[in-house]
Structure formats: C-alpha cells, structure tokens
Amino acid sequence: MKRDRKQDNAGTTSGAAPFSSLTPDSLLDAQEAVGLRPDGRLLALNSYENRVYQVFMEVGAPLVCKFYRAGRWSDAAILEEHAFSTELAERELPVVAPLAMGGQTLHHHGDLRFAVFPRQSGRAPEFDSGQTLEWMGRFIGRMHAVGALKPFVDRPQINIESFGEEPRDFLLHGGFLPPELSEVYFGVVDQALGGVRRCFERAGQVATLRLHGDCHVGNVLWVDGGDGVGGDLGGGGPCFVDFDDARMGPAIQDLWMLLSGERVDQVRQLADVLAGYEDFYEFDSRELYLIEALRTLRLIHYAGWLARRWDDPAFPAAFPWFNTQRYWQDRILELREQIALMDEPPLWSA
Image (cartoon, rainbow, N blue to C red):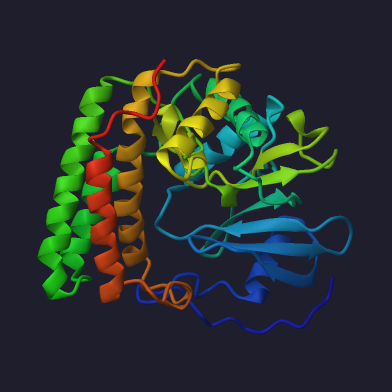
C-alpha cells in the first residue's frame, strides 16, 4: 500500500497530552508494522479511557484497533486481560478476544501500545426483558465458572481502598471541589465509606474471582442470528466486547449493573438473572449485602476517574458538566441516598 506520509514530530514528553503521538499516520504505520494492510480509512469508536478505531483493510473485513492509555496498566496486566478473554473464547464463550499476530496480542509501535480485535456487529441488549436477563445470567455464570479457576496476578482487586479511598484522596488533594462544598462532600464520602465497610462486614468472607468488572449495557452487544464469534451465538445472544476493566472481585460485581428501577423491579430482575446464572455457577447469597456498597464505590470511583483524566482534552469536551457546582451538589445528594440504601435489607435472599 502506498500513501503520503507526513513527518510526525509530536513526541511524548512528560507534559504532552495523552495520545499526542497517535495520529492517523502513526496509527496506520502501527497496523502495517504487525503485517496488516489498512486501506487508509479509519472510524473512531466511542472510547475515552483508551483510543479505539475501526480500521478498514485492503482485503477482508475491517478490524478494531485499541490503543492503550499510557500509565494505566502494565504490559503484564494487559496480557493478563488478553489471556482471560482468550481463555473464555477457547471455551466457546461469546467474547471478542484479541488477535494473535506473530505470536503476540500486545504490540508496541514507538511509545504506543495496541491490540487488534475482530469487528463484532450487534445491537444494545434490552435489559428490561426477563428472557434477556436470564440469558445474561447464564452467560455470566459460564464466565465466572472459568474466572474462578485461577486468580489474576497483575490486575488489581475491586475493594474499598482502590474504588473508594484512593479516588477520595485524589479529589481531596487535587483541589477540584469548590470551597463551599468541599467539607460537605468529603464528609458525606466518609459516611458512605463507613456504610460500605458495614456492608462488607455483614457479607463476611466472600470469594473473589476473575471478573469482567464493568458489565453495563455499553460493553455488551446482542447478536441476532448466526454472525457471532462463538459459543451460544449460533442463534443470537449476548457478546462481551471489552475486558479492559477486568479485575478480581466478588461475583455480584458483574450482576448488579444489570438491575435498574425501583426495588420491586430489581428484585424481579435479580431473580431472572440468578435463574440463568445458577445453571452454571453457584451464587453465594451473602453477596447481596454488597450490591449497594459496590454501587456506592462505583459512584466515588467515577468522580475520581473524571478528575484524574481532566488533562486529556477529550474529557472536558465530552463531560462539560463535570466539576461544576451543580455536579458536586448532585453527587452529595446521590451519596446520601446510598447511605440510606446500604442500611436496608438486601434485595433477595434464598
């Protein structure tokens, strides 16, 4: 393939913006360096933590190229994610695993690290359907049966320290909050973390396993017909497309994000999910004490994540409401609601 090349002088100094060396030319050069033949057409896909593109090829179907944010994961942690999704795919679970080229799934091009994946088509699942939720439960139960076979070594665990205390401290020392709300916000966060600790104490010593870690609707495609990547997808079904947040943690972390609405709705949804889940993996009902605790940790972690990424030009453009007075007022109210919810009985018990 021939195309005009421009000299890329955008190095990555310590003060450079994230992905400053990732240009259309460097992206295509990286593909060619691993033996691919892109035709020059690129389509940016929705991703903020990393940069993800659909890359059209001279021959064959387009591929998806994911460039990893510097400093977030070590190479060993990324390879552990790749190994997990590959292990799931080899056991015929419907996941999109990275392609191995030259015997490697993680590639380096200059200061860029990237992986290449097959493109998977599909639509957003309808989590308001009991049949869909039961299907999702079966899928996650199969995934957890594999995830429990051995632990992650280089990837962290979802816990109070990493998802609660660390983002709280980053916000506290970063000066993000307006002075008139700072004391109130951090006081409410500390109350919320106290509630989280009590929930974990009530649950007791629960098992941890390798998780997807971020099981929301945006990370699942519903495949119609026989165009899936494996497993149950001969007649359609769910497919996970992104394991970037895979961590160790309790099984309920991959289940609670399927639930929404009022308490009565969530009880029904949880029953549907567990009806499928327990076909493949036993659920420890003590983990139900952790649902609102994990939801609380996610809220605290999300605010810290936005703050930590604020030097990336993509974030102020995509999240203009962050760090406004209204944003922090809403977070205070949200956490106060969570404090009350963590003192309520769990949704369901056997």
